[in-house]
Length: 157
Image (cartoon, rainbow, N blue to C red; front, side, top):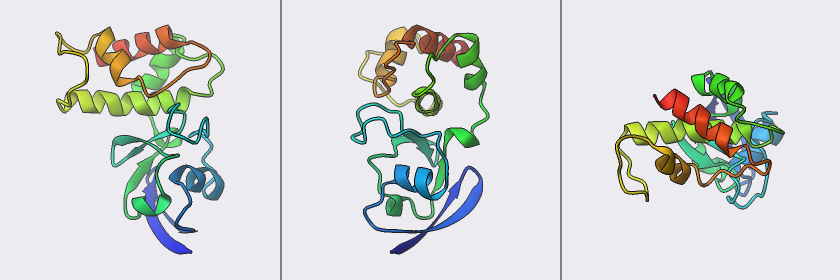
């Protein structure tokens, strides 16, 4: 066992974990935070997306020990205009992917504001093609993409 300390949603947490425990399992099983979901456990769906020091990551692909001393934010620790925008724009159906979608969108907006490029040629601002590319790591099996897109566009200005 390895002892790690991290700030999770503003609270310092100390955990004893085996070196192979994923950050997702540590958050869900050790801390009881069920917002991040285990959709695929392979980094393909984005349902496990959390923010690590403000940067979006797939928690299922990260080892908890890698985040010793870091700050982790899950949907439970988020108070962001995107949440209300998702509701207003029907950016969810079953809701399973919504925590990951929102955390990913928060991280994506920060990346865009910091000037991080995407695979889509730069246009005038954060347009639909940019958003689709930047959010392509998050899947919605219900197909709520139009509402998700509208919510992100609303918040991005």
